Image (cartoon, rainbow over all chains, first blue to last red; front, side):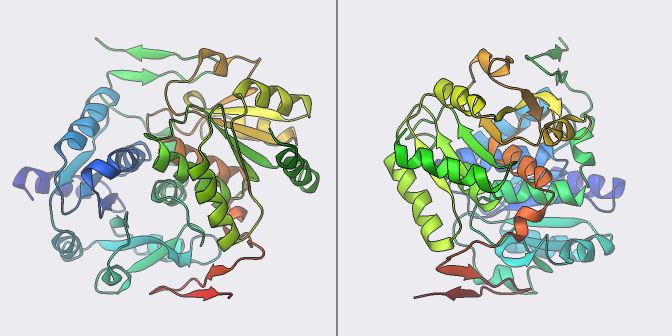
Length: 197
Length: 197
């Protein structure tokens, strides 16, 4: 983890006690490029503070996401290459909690797990798997909570979106993305954007 | 559209006036296989009645989704190959409304668009694009509503998930999937399933 990136996390933490960062595990640059891009863009659009692509380096993806952030505004950090164990350990050492999104966990709708996480008032690292995750992810040494967005197989991208929407109580979709070069002006019909040259 | 599939839609319609089906446009079998699979699995897991892969045939995907449904239960139809225009026309002729998910549309959080859709008490076809969609999608000849899950670029899979979660008010994540061979028993830690042999 580079020092500059480390400081990005710290700055974000100071602003909001219950910020969320997303750690994506198991990315395979060729095979998962589009899906992981969708996961990262979802994290950004739904008001997570940043994205950690653990254990691998994918410069092309970093460029894609940072270009979106430059054009569409807001603050969003993209880190890559850190081993997931160090990232988790570091996060916890700095007072954060770790939430693993998995179909096997406590159901976000039928259990009180979301309230239990919110009540802690701590910053949250969301672990989002890709391929079959290591069994350790389920243990309390890694995850403080295992949360299921329904107990059916579907998509980490969908699970992440619903978690963020519920965690931020919908407000994330009204978030203003500062210093945007492109901005959509929502309408009933057609496509309208404001572009700053 | 085969007759057997047609009748699947009709059966589902009779049960619930505000059912949702998802029409996926612009699927390219090689390039989009995983992403479209995630979209279809999200539709199923979040209680849509079925999925139409418009304009193309992808037998492998059909097999994948139908296998998930056989194993994990519930009713979910998968159709493919119908031209999107016919599917939309047919849906409207049978009293349904069409909702196009697009970042350019009315914001689901800051506008009353979701309530306006709900109040109609009609079955909903959700148009989910992939590549750049035809301009016609935005017109009232095609879409009754253009809805944005936030006005930022992200993922059709994420947008679909948030739309379904809000439309069904979270109840979809507690849905029982009948005749399941595999069932997850949600827990705080570990993976537990009940398997019917």
